[in-house]
Length: 207
Image (tube, rainbow, N blue to C red; front, side, top):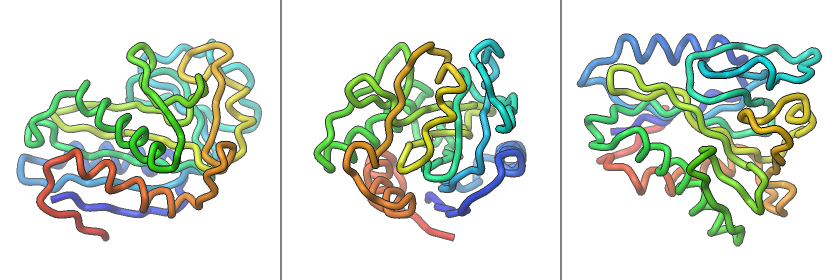
């Protein structure tokens, strides 16, 4: 069973602590969960992140966290999906989870008439070379947390203050700029079946 939790707009640090706490206390009988939310403005720097990729954060906080990857930005108008999955129970590995997340976005974009692709050297989803979705995961005890962010309709200026995902000059785009005019909640509702269809859950429950 997969429990889906819609959390609204949240500050980053409390949600991060809640992710860590859920991963720590869960066992082989714990349910998998998918947390859907937006964050107030924040830059997050992964475990391998280099401070040199944070160019000019200004008044936006920078938080060093325990996921993989480099630096990214979260803010209102971006769909964030945190995946609390027991990979052993699902029978998948880390690379397969990355591909499942990427393919779910690529498939949904295809339904909207937009061609997108992934990159093996830089996980995420790209449209004409510009990044529209970023991935960052932590696996602990065979279970995942952190996850996926998809740019819906947001202020993209903060991405110019960093080297997104550690790549100088990487272009960033969003659904609104591609003519896909949806709210974050609408995108979550439409994208969710594209993710769940790739996973072996008997049921999905919202709470």
